Length: 207
Image 1 (tube, rainbow, N blue to C red):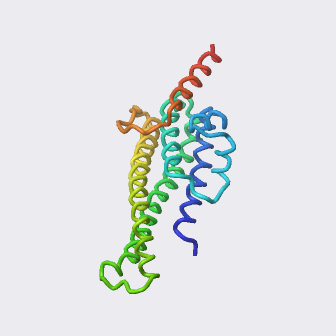
Image 2: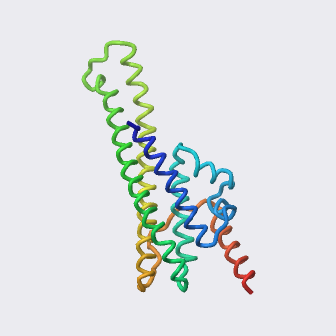
Image 3: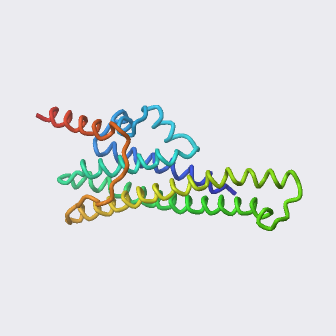
């Protein structure tokens, strides 16, 4: 049976693959996608093919780039393209939702493991060097876990915004207005500028 971490990594990989397919259908190249993410195209390919999970900050960037480009390049007048995008977006929403649940499960597992290590100290029954080492290690792990919990909250917020945007796009395809989400996603310095330059370049190319 696969561990929670391994299953989560597989979900991330499937999510990245779907993310790339959707943005490609929206008209972006791999190079443009990488530029908006603040990484090289090789890194994007690595994320798509590896079984290792991407970092929390990179996951947040992926959600942000997805939202921005779906809002900017939704094919309002191209029903055929909309019908190609919608099933991919439905699957992406499912994958990202499952990944969110797995992240919560993983955080719970890490917390339980930490409490198990700390329990000898709480019970005042630490009697061996090995037990003291476990307690000292748990202290450092507690700090790491606190950072992980903060990252989890940030990812969850980013995911909720992406989920809202997918629902808005579906509503738009059904003839309802597509409104921008009130929640703002963090972006790395230079990413918005790169996105703006890319948009301006495409506008000039159409003239």
